[in-house]
Amino acid sequence: MKKTDPHIIVIFGGSGDLTIRKLIPALFNLHCRGFLPSCFAILGLGRTPHTDESYREKAVVGNPHLLKNENADDKSIKDFGRHIYYHTMNSQSESDYGNLKDRLMDINEQCSTQENYVFYLSTPPSLYQSIASGLAKVALNHEDRGWKRLIVEKPFGYDLKSASALNAHLLTCFKEDQIYRIDHYLGKETVQNVLVTRFANSTFEPIWNRNYIHHVEITAAESVGVEKRGGYYESSGALRDMIQNHLLQLVALVAMEPPNLSSAAAIRDEKLKLFQSLRPLTVEEIRNNVIRGQYVGSRINGESFPGYREEEGVKSDSKTETYAALKFYIDNWRWADVPFYIRTGKKLPTRVTEIVVHFKPTPHRLFNYTNDHVNAGNTLVIRIQPNEGILLKFGVKIPGEGFRVTNTNMDFHYSQLVESYLPDAYERLLLDCIQGDATLYSRGDSVEAAWTFINPILNAWQEFDDIKVFGYPVGTWGPEHADQLIEGKNFTWRYPCKNLAGDGAYCEL
Ligand code: BG6
Image 1 (cartoon, protein in one colour):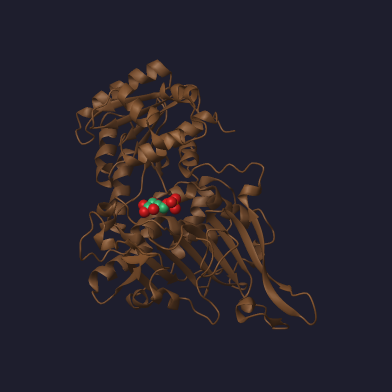
Image 2: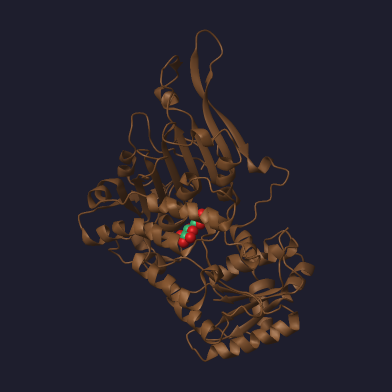
C-alpha cells in the first residue's frame, strides 16, 4: 500500500451538492476502510455561515448519501465527524485568504497534519482562477513545509480558448505537478481495467489494430434528464458535458499505444499522442458525421414525460443538445481507416456505458450462419457500468447435421470476483491525489488537445444555423439519423440492456 501522509482536505464549495453527494461519502468510505491516516482533517469552506458543529450535522450526521453506506454506524459516524471542520469565507475576497491560512494553521497544530493540503475546487468554474490566485497570494501554494495540491473539477474550460487561459492562469499559481484535473470516469475501476485488458493479456493486443478491427463503438447512455441542472446544462450540452472529457478519455484508453511504464508520465504521454492523432473534422464532416439531438416530451405507458425545453432553467427555444453522436478517425499507423463511433444522451432507455470493439468478419465464408448479423464478426464488449464486466460474442456450431453457426456469449462479471467491491470513482481519485499519484488525472496539454478536436464542432454549430438539432422522444435511443452514421452492411449501434449479455429491442432496461 502506498504511503498516505497526514493532511487536510480543504473543500471550496463545502456545502455544495457535489461535496455532500460525492466527496464527503467518498472520504467517509476511505476512512472506514482504513485508507486515511489518523492525522487528517476535512475543512469545508463557503459563504453559508456554519459552525463546525452545524457543518458536521449537514455533511455527516444528517447526510443521506453517507447514511446509506453500510459502514455508517453510530461509532464510525462519530469518529469520522471528529475530523470535520468548517470555515466561513468569501472565496472572491482576497482579504479572506489570510484568515483561511490562520485557520489552517490552527487545525494543523491541533491535528498534526504537517501542512500538507489538498485544495478541492468544488465551485462554479468561474471562481477557479480567483481561488488559485487567492491561495497563491498568501503562499498556500508553497511546498517548503508540506505539499500543496489543487484538484480542479470539470468542466475545465468552455472551449479551447478558455481552457488554455485557465491552464495558463493556474500555472502562474501552481506547478503542473500540483494540479489535478479531475475526470471522474478515470476513477471508475472498469475504465482502468481497459488498460489491464489490453496490456496484461497477450491475446488482445496483437489483433488490436486496423488489420483485425472493423470499427469501435462507445456509448454512454443515461436514463435521467437534466434534473435540476438545467441552468448549467444550457451553457454546456452533451458535447461539452460528456464527450470532450469522459468519452474522449475512453477513446484514449482504447486506442492509445502501450506505454513503456505504468507511470503517470508514460500513460499521460500516450494519451496526449492519441488526442493529437484525432483527425480534425471539416465543416462538411461535422454536417454529416456529427448528430445532435434534444429530447422531446413523450407518453410512456400512459405517463407523460416533459421534454428538455420544459425543464427548469431551460429556454423554451433552446437548441442545446442532450444527445450527440460522432463518427471520426484516428490518423496513425494502428488505426488508419478504422471508424470510431461515440454517442451519449440523456433520457435514453437505460443507463449504460460500454465500449464495443467489432472485429472484422472471417475473410472467407465457410458455413451457413443463422442470420447475416452473426457473420458480422466477433464483438468484445467492455461494460463500464452497470453490470460491470466483459463479454465476447463469437460463433458456435448449432448441434446437429451440417455446419450451422450461431452467436454465443462468453462473459465475465465483476460480481464473480472474491474481491468484488468496486469503490466509487471519487474514492479512488481522492486517495490518489492524497498519495500524490496523478495517473488518473488529466494533464493540461491533453485537456487542450481534446478541446482542439471538439472546438471546430462547437464553432460550426454556432456559425451554421442549418446544422439541425433533431428531436427524439424521451425513452428512445436518440435521433434516427444517428443510425445512419454507422457504415457497412449488417452494422448498427448495439442496443444494450441493463445486463451485459443482453441486447436488442426487447431486453431488460
Ligand atoms: C457528469 C455530467 O460529469 O457525468 C453529468 O456532468 C452526467 O451530466 C454524469 O450525468 C454521468 O456520470 P456517471 O458516472 O453517472 O456515468
